[in-house]
Image 1 (tube, helix red, strand yellow):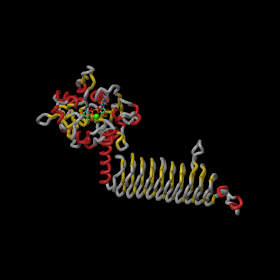
Image 2: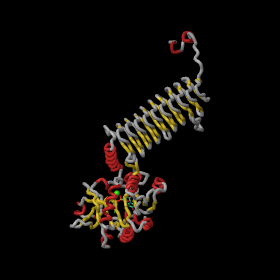
Image 3: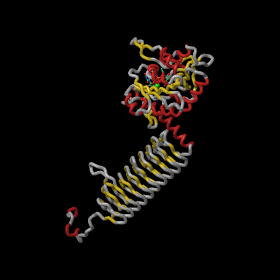
Length: 466
Ligand code: UD1
Ligand code: CA
């Protein structure tokens, strides 16, 4: 643990996103941009974080649910003004260093944060600006250095002269500051004026650099030598570009870890998913959230796995699986839906058009086709025939069904919950089971077949009476 802290700027609306949510909640690989930023800070060892919120701040507060401090910037008067709102927080962390990050620049890596801190400390800096050289610097603050390469100031697009505009080293919006120096320097920032309206409109955090240099203290730029770290998204087109970059990074990391992705078409993997070596991911597969997948699995094609735990040697072919567990050796699909709270046991076989909801399925059980199992505890070695259903909902309450080990559920059985089928018990095909079936018993719950001899000739069904 370090005594250092971070202030993350997240008050902007991001008008061009055309969203009802704050911009920092826009998602890259299904993860809000602000989570990328907070995760990078935490991974770099800084977990004492204050978020400066503004537009729809309650949505960000709700999202973090008290995990980090938040302060509200009620009027968006610029990045300098935003940091001023976190004054009390920064004061509590004096002496020490404060990391300032833009909440809408999700590709800042923890390694860069750490390396910049080392640079900051080694240079005895009061301010370290993390910079990068980009192809097109338009819109970014330019890093202006003196002839001997020392940082002089940061100039924004609006204020830059023609020669300054050519500079392609830009401010990432991430900085390390000495906490006490930052607090003093914020007071020294002069507001920019809107000449037309003749009023103060913005306080630039970037101006703190000049204030610091005027005090005779050290301020320097740390060139992160990766143009991606500065990237943010102002609209959905840029958001898609961030997704593209992040997606390629995550796929590459997984492949280097031993995961096979023979064709990356439509494959999206969450940065927080963990997949073991020798597993293959097939086209059209989306792995979301904190999913964990073991080794020797085949996932896809066309599968969606979210916040689930998948064991080793599992086959999921066209499976949708949400907040569920699938144990070693289970084979499922195609066209299977596993809903939250379900646990699919070892070596379970599941065939086409099967749905599970909040159910536990014992090992070696087979559910081969067209079956719905909801709110059910199924033992091991059970066989479900084709077209079975649990009737777990009576329109008012949900009830559970229990199926014992090695039971055999005949085709088209309806198990009306609450009901229990014992160990080794059988249900006859087409049965509607409303009463418990004891161990080793056969339950037949359908009307007996009756034959009407020569009925057709006697009745002459109407369609033949032409
Ligand atoms: C800022 C930097 C620029 C840098 C760029 C990198 C300044 C003046 N400029 O410019 O040098 O190259 O980031 O992306 O700092 N925010 C608030 N409150 C405000 C204004 C902004 O919280 O009053 C937040 C935004 O929500 C956003 C971040 O600060 O997360 C950056 O703000 P933005 O307006 O995008 O700054 P840029 O103009 O991009
Ligand atoms: Ca920006």
